[in-house]
Length: 205
Image 1 (tube, rainbow, N blue to C red):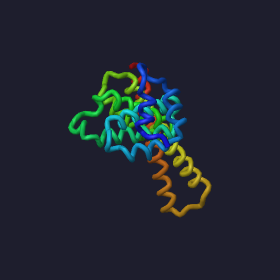
Image 2 (image 1 turned 90 degrees about the horizontal axis):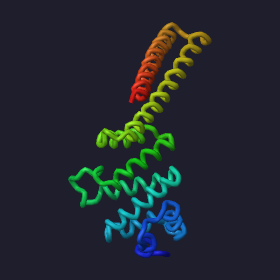
Image 3 (image 1 turned 60 degrees about the horizontal axis):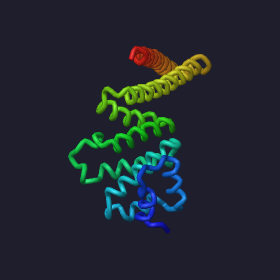
Image 4 (image 1 turned 120 degrees about the vertical axis):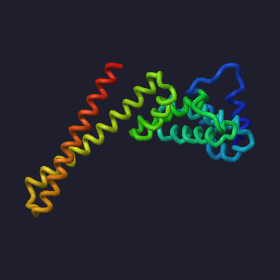
Protein backbone atom coordinates (compact mmCIF):
# COMPACT_ATOMS: atom_id res chain seq x y z
CA UNK A 1 0.00 0.00 0.00
CA UNK A 2 1.22 3.50 -0.83
CA UNK A 3 2.60 5.50 2.08
CA UNK A 4 1.49 9.01 2.99
CA UNK A 5 4.87 10.43 1.97
CA UNK A 6 4.64 8.79 -1.45
CA UNK A 7 1.10 10.08 -1.98
CA UNK A 8 2.04 13.55 -0.73
CA UNK A 9 5.09 13.78 -3.00
CA UNK A 10 3.08 12.57 -5.98
CA UNK A 11 0.59 15.40 -5.49
CA UNK A 12 2.81 18.27 -4.43
CA UNK A 13 5.90 17.63 -6.55
CA UNK A 14 5.48 20.08 -9.37
CA UNK A 15 5.60 23.78 -10.17
CA UNK A 16 1.88 24.35 -10.49
CA UNK A 17 -1.05 23.10 -8.36
CA UNK A 18 -3.21 20.31 -9.72
CA UNK A 19 -6.76 21.00 -10.82
CA UNK A 20 -9.54 19.47 -8.70
CA UNK A 21 -10.26 16.49 -10.94
CA UNK A 22 -6.62 15.54 -11.27
CA UNK A 23 -6.01 15.90 -7.52
CA UNK A 24 -8.94 13.63 -6.65
CA UNK A 25 -8.01 11.21 -9.42
CA UNK A 26 -4.51 10.72 -8.03
CA UNK A 27 -5.82 10.12 -4.51
CA UNK A 28 -8.52 7.70 -5.64
CA UNK A 29 -6.19 5.82 -7.98
CA UNK A 30 -3.90 5.12 -5.01
CA UNK A 31 -6.72 2.90 -3.67
CA UNK A 32 -5.82 4.00 -0.17
CA UNK A 33 -8.08 4.46 2.84
CA UNK A 34 -7.11 8.10 3.22
CA UNK A 35 -8.63 8.65 6.67
CA UNK A 36 -6.98 5.53 8.07
CA UNK A 37 -3.68 6.57 6.52
CA UNK A 38 -3.90 10.08 7.91
CA UNK A 39 -4.86 8.91 11.41
CA UNK A 40 -1.74 6.76 11.58
CA UNK A 41 0.70 9.56 10.85
CA UNK A 42 -1.25 12.53 12.17
CA UNK A 43 1.30 13.36 14.84
CA UNK A 44 4.38 12.88 12.65
CA UNK A 45 3.96 15.80 10.29
CA UNK A 46 0.86 17.75 11.17
CA UNK A 47 1.39 20.57 8.68
CA UNK A 48 1.64 18.19 5.70
CA UNK A 49 -1.31 16.11 6.88
CA UNK A 50 -3.41 19.23 7.47
CA UNK A 51 -2.53 20.62 4.05
CA UNK A 52 -3.24 17.35 2.26
CA UNK A 53 -6.59 16.64 3.95
CA UNK A 54 -7.75 20.25 3.52
CA UNK A 55 -6.80 20.33 -0.16
CA UNK A 56 -8.37 16.93 -0.80
CA UNK A 57 -11.59 17.94 0.98
CA UNK A 58 -11.86 21.24 -0.93
CA UNK A 59 -11.07 19.64 -4.29
CA UNK A 60 -13.51 16.83 -3.60
CA UNK A 61 -16.25 19.31 -2.71
CA UNK A 62 -15.58 21.46 -5.75
CA UNK A 63 -16.33 18.46 -7.98
CA UNK A 64 -19.52 17.44 -6.21
CA UNK A 65 -21.06 18.28 -2.85
CA UNK A 66 -21.68 14.85 -1.34
CA UNK A 67 -21.59 13.04 2.00
CA UNK A 68 -18.13 11.76 1.09
CA UNK A 69 -16.73 15.27 0.65
CA UNK A 70 -18.43 16.27 3.91
CA UNK A 71 -16.51 13.55 5.77
CA UNK A 72 -13.18 15.01 4.65
CA UNK A 73 -14.28 18.62 5.17
CA UNK A 74 -15.13 17.80 8.79
CA UNK A 75 -11.83 15.94 9.20
CA UNK A 76 -9.87 18.89 7.83
CA UNK A 77 -11.73 21.37 10.04
CA UNK A 78 -11.02 19.12 13.02
CA UNK A 79 -7.30 19.03 12.19
CA UNK A 80 -7.17 22.82 12.15
CA UNK A 81 -9.09 23.16 15.40
CA UNK A 82 -6.89 20.66 17.24
CA UNK A 83 -3.59 22.04 15.95
CA UNK A 84 -1.67 23.80 18.72
CA UNK A 85 -0.13 26.06 16.08
CA UNK A 86 -3.37 28.02 15.87
CA UNK A 87 -4.19 28.00 19.57
CA UNK A 88 -5.59 31.39 20.61
CA UNK A 89 -5.90 32.58 17.01
CA UNK A 90 -9.00 33.21 14.95
CA UNK A 91 -8.92 30.31 12.49
CA UNK A 92 -11.02 32.25 9.98
CA UNK A 93 -7.95 34.42 9.40
CA UNK A 94 -6.50 31.34 7.68
CA UNK A 95 -7.67 31.33 4.01
CA UNK A 96 -7.67 27.53 3.85
CA UNK A 97 -9.85 27.24 6.95
CA UNK A 98 -12.20 29.87 5.56
CA UNK A 99 -12.48 27.86 2.34
CA UNK A 100 -13.20 24.68 4.33
CA UNK A 101 -16.05 26.33 6.22
CA UNK A 102 -17.49 27.75 3.00
CA UNK A 103 -17.35 24.42 1.19
CA UNK A 104 -18.83 22.65 4.22
CA UNK A 105 -21.67 25.19 4.32
CA UNK A 106 -22.39 24.62 0.62
CA UNK A 107 -22.26 20.86 1.09
CA UNK A 108 -24.63 20.93 4.04
CA UNK A 109 -26.98 23.11 1.99
CA UNK A 110 -26.97 20.74 -1.01
CA UNK A 111 -27.58 17.82 1.37
CA UNK A 112 -30.60 19.69 2.82
CA UNK A 113 -29.02 20.11 6.25
CA UNK A 114 -29.98 23.78 6.39
CA UNK A 115 -29.44 24.21 10.13
CA UNK A 116 -25.76 23.26 9.96
CA UNK A 117 -25.29 25.17 6.72
CA UNK A 118 -26.78 28.20 8.48
CA UNK A 119 -24.30 27.85 11.35
CA UNK A 120 -21.32 27.84 8.96
CA UNK A 121 -22.63 30.72 6.85
CA UNK A 122 -23.31 32.64 10.06
CA UNK A 123 -19.66 32.22 11.12
CA UNK A 124 -18.51 33.54 7.75
CA UNK A 125 -21.04 36.36 7.62
CA UNK A 126 -20.14 37.55 11.12
CA UNK A 127 -16.43 37.50 10.30
CA UNK A 128 -16.63 38.92 6.78
CA UNK A 129 -19.64 41.24 6.95
CA UNK A 130 -18.98 42.85 3.57
CA UNK A 131 -18.86 39.52 1.71
CA UNK A 132 -22.04 39.30 -0.34
CA UNK A 133 -21.69 35.54 -0.95
CA UNK A 134 -21.69 34.74 2.76
CA UNK A 135 -24.66 37.01 3.45
CA UNK A 136 -26.67 35.48 0.60
CA UNK A 137 -25.77 31.96 1.77
CA UNK A 138 -27.03 32.78 5.26
CA UNK A 139 -30.24 34.31 3.88
CA UNK A 140 -30.86 31.29 1.62
CA UNK A 141 -30.56 28.93 4.60
CA UNK A 142 -32.90 31.07 6.68
CA UNK A 143 -35.40 31.10 3.82
CA UNK A 144 -35.31 27.30 3.56
CA UNK A 145 -35.71 26.84 7.33
CA UNK A 146 -38.62 29.29 7.48
CA UNK A 147 -40.29 27.51 4.55
CA UNK A 148 -39.96 24.14 6.29
CA UNK A 149 -41.46 25.51 9.51
CA UNK A 150 -44.24 27.14 7.53
CA UNK A 151 -45.15 23.82 5.89
CA UNK A 152 -45.12 22.14 9.30
CA UNK A 153 -47.49 24.73 10.76
CA UNK A 154 -49.77 24.45 7.73
CA UNK A 155 -49.84 20.67 8.13
CA UNK A 156 -50.72 21.00 11.82
CA UNK A 157 -53.38 23.53 10.83
CA UNK A 158 -54.90 21.16 8.27
CA UNK A 159 -54.91 18.26 10.75
CA UNK A 160 -56.54 20.43 13.41
CA UNK A 161 -59.31 21.59 11.06
CA UNK A 162 -59.94 18.04 9.84
CA UNK A 163 -60.10 16.71 13.39
CA UNK A 164 -62.56 19.37 14.52
CA UNK A 165 -64.84 18.97 11.50
CA UNK A 166 -64.72 15.22 10.92
CA UNK A 167 -64.20 13.65 14.32
CA UNK A 168 -66.60 13.53 17.22
CA UNK A 169 -64.31 14.90 19.90
CA UNK A 170 -65.03 15.44 23.56
CA UNK A 171 -65.48 19.08 24.58
CA UNK A 172 -62.06 19.28 26.27
CA UNK A 173 -60.24 17.72 23.35
CA UNK A 174 -62.11 19.92 20.89
CA UNK A 175 -61.04 23.02 22.82
CA UNK A 176 -57.46 21.77 22.72
CA UNK A 177 -57.63 21.24 18.96
CA UNK A 178 -59.10 24.71 18.49
CA UNK A 179 -56.23 26.17 20.54
CA UNK A 180 -53.71 24.27 18.41
CA UNK A 181 -55.48 25.51 15.28
CA UNK A 182 -55.34 29.14 16.40
CA UNK A 183 -51.68 28.90 17.43
CA UNK A 184 -50.76 27.20 14.14
CA UNK A 185 -52.58 29.89 12.20
CA UNK A 186 -50.80 32.68 14.08
CA UNK A 187 -47.43 30.99 13.67
CA UNK A 188 -48.02 30.37 9.96
CA UNK A 189 -48.97 34.00 9.33
CA UNK A 190 -45.99 35.20 11.38
CA UNK A 191 -43.55 32.99 9.50
CA UNK A 192 -44.99 34.13 6.18
CA UNK A 193 -44.56 37.76 7.25
CA UNK A 194 -40.96 37.23 8.35
CA UNK A 195 -40.13 35.37 5.14
CA UNK A 196 -41.63 38.07 2.91
CA UNK A 197 -39.83 40.78 4.88
CA UNK A 198 -36.49 39.01 4.51
CA UNK A 199 -37.02 38.54 0.78
CA UNK A 200 -37.75 42.25 0.38
CA UNK A 201 -34.56 43.07 2.28
CA UNK A 202 -32.60 40.68 0.05
CA UNK A 203 -34.04 42.28 -3.10
CA UNK A 204 -33.12 45.74 -1.81
CA UNK A 205 -29.60 44.51 -1.06
